[in-house]
Image (cartoon, rainbow, N blue to C red; front, side, top):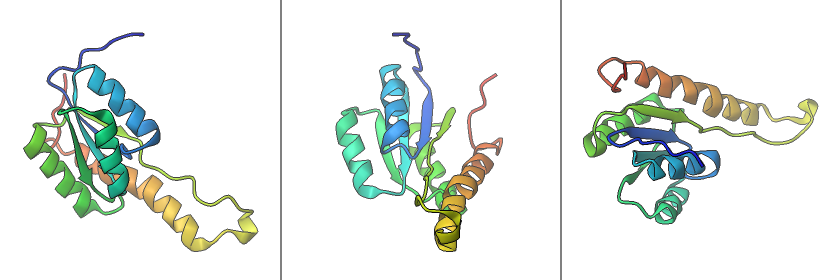
Amino acid sequence: MVQYNYQGQVAVITGGAQGIGLAVAQRLLEGNAKVALWDANGQALEDAKAQLKSTDVFAFLVDVTDLSQVEKAAAETENALGAISMLVHSAGIAGANAPVADYSPAEWKKVLSINLDGAFNVTKRAAQPSSFLYMT
């Protein structure tokens, strides 16, 4: 397996408490990165932190659909770990499985909010020059 050296790098992983986000966190930790898991599920965050068994992983409860929570999590991450140099945005949901005629508008809005608004909020924060460490 290919190994990468992420020594000195700080990675934020949205949706990092499970699934693809958790798998990416494991690989980044194996490459010596410091990892901030951002997730809206507190229990999953605790479980992920315990599973990863690393002093270089930190967990932050954040709803990516709320820009103020994203900004707060970014500031807390920077205070705990230093400048953020990597972003893995893997927060997302599939939503209910139903025919369109039966699909709840509230469920559809939830899917769009997490998958689109969340991506916008996290990317907006990442795009601020004073926020994330830009690698050249």
